[in-house]
Image 1 (cartoon, rainbow, N blue to C red):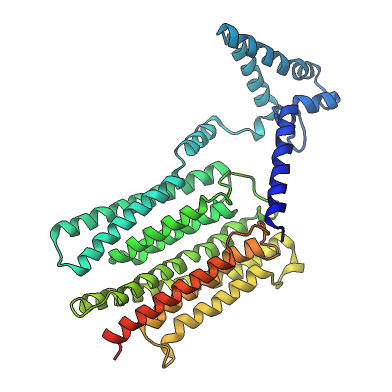
Image 2 (cartoon, rainbow, N blue to C red; image 1 turned 90 degrees about the horizontal axis):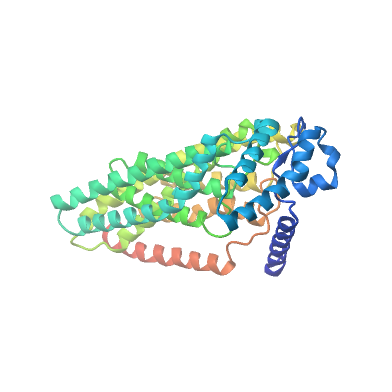
Length: 431
């Protein structure tokens, strides 16, 4: 695994090469080669290296002199303020591109849509909107739990429920637009899978939390966290072409199912956290109301984990179909780190769900604590394999995003949370 200096050196080298190619004119590939099987476009610099690549004499002369003429005209227009001649040449470039390379050019509608998509940057804004809505709604619900119900409080909570639903509609629209612009399902790289996991988490939060405001508020908060992580500097939000191995219809089926399963698992984790916090803040006066909320969240948690387990299991089997389609029969039945950790996650969550059948492992406290601990296997399956282990799924291998110190701190926080919650559970609820 490369160290920090090596990664920074590699990034600097890439940027220097990009700058060098731009200064030389290699990056400005604006001339399509007529009737090229690969629909190749070249720059004026590349044309000078091999002018015979364009057979048409008229087009050849245009490529030879048109670009320099445009730069000269543009410079003159900057001084005179008259851009009419420069605009005519620019239109000639556009007409030529449509004539010889129109089959691979974006439509005007798609260009306008992408400009608006980049302008509004909806997923980055949704992070803060989900955060505000979820946090305020959660605070109102806490007041409702500890204080008597009031009509004004209930009305405010309903308003924020509709706001969260509206944000989910915007989230869905953003995914549809990205699908339209990219031409493929929006869950093919790290950034897209993160915004898709956020969408799936919110979807299952709305489905399971139809009658549970606490579930909806918690889900909105954790969705905001996922979107925040998606916009850290180690993820590239740019729309790019699919890698050849991903260009399969099984991508849409396999990845959609298995990545969407992370949604209910994430929901189960945050509900486990909220349930343990409720146990911590239980006292004699509110223990009945707290118990109702803990029971409700635990039931929804179990439902979410069950749905997630079913989806993860189905998605893992569908992965074999994708492997057979992408790599051929030689790979069928092979196991790389991604599939191995997916199987480990399946076994862990199967154990968590069936703990209620084992005497001594029953109870809301232990179930909610295990729903948090089990989520570590999902984090390893999603982040650990992609960024740390070598395999067919490791498209970003070598980028260290989580330190050992962070893992130890997270484990300590979960242990402290579980210990304090256990004290409240034993004092007020354990018989």
